Length: 98
Image 1 (cartoon, rainbow, N blue to C red):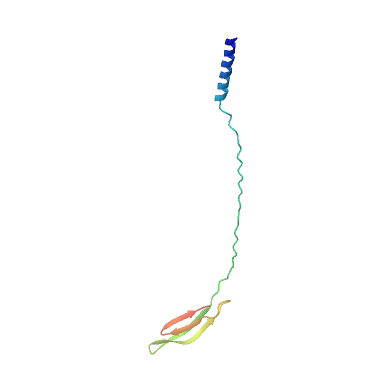
Image 2: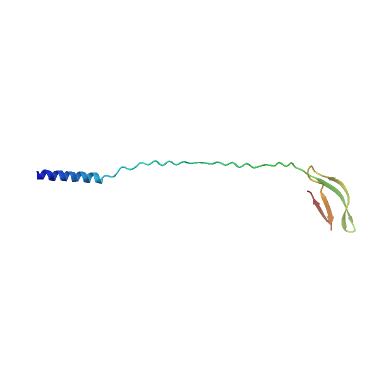
């Protein structure tokens, strides 16, 4: 009987060792990733400005070594632009359009 008891203890010990050495099953975990995409559309405001022009024509004359404006032959404003402003100072011609 003593021998029988030794065998039961021995077998129990073996079973215990076998089950304790086995690795546990991996835990399956599901990772859910939520992806949110935000689209932003930027709209620009476009102002369309039509082409415009003004013109100026004049006759220049040289008197005593300096240039003078003899007379204006044509000065036309545009649709939006005013007539050009013309200045003649020290033989330099300046034309401004606004």
